[in-house]
Image (cartoon, rainbow, N blue to C red; front, side, top):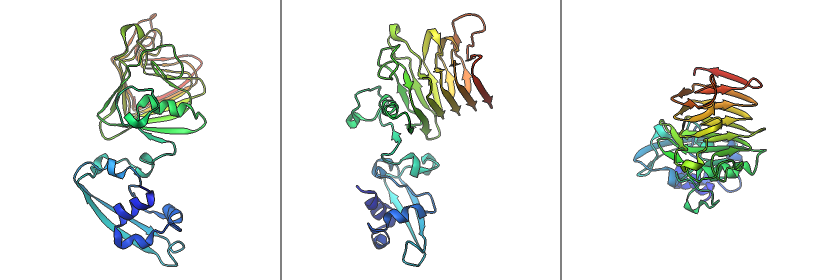
Length: 287
């Protein structure tokens, strides 16, 4: 379904179709003045009974010299509860572009979205375009398990999730999404994230758990680039140094983050929760 048709059928209704024509749709889009669910995936997102009220204005320049306002109420047996809607649904659910919504909790690296888009496949896509920023959306309350064995690999195809570009991973909903690395085979245990040199990642509203790197730094996360966490829990990880997080190079900003119940197995004072190397800059607040 085209975006034009989503507006006509889902938002405006038949009586208002004349306000959106193919010739002026591109001009009208920037003049939307309130949060409107703009997505070709609208039918997939709507999944519970509720009412969604939408309104927008068309400025005088794009509506033939007259300002018009169209308001409509959409009631559907499939509408997502308003409490679960993102702050900016236009951005968070944009189809295409650089926003990817993960649709399966399984660990896959097949590049085939026919079985659902996995977290690993989303990161693989972002790694292919390191000069662009990607936002990856996870569903709150779900557990995304890492299970494809193959530690010491640096391209996120197996083992931990190697970050080579510029990525934000965030949760949709009030509950955190959990990324769990405890399902690797005993001889192939690995951390959750490895942020490579020159790359950057922001984690929002997640729980990072189950990582294990007993012979290396960073059981949950190792960063040699730029790392920012906000509203994140780092728990139940094991590392030689920095059981939860190891900031080896680069910079880190740890905000409103709980680092608890992690373990360092290396030398004394090696940072059960957080290890910060001398050559790095780390800002920690409300954590």
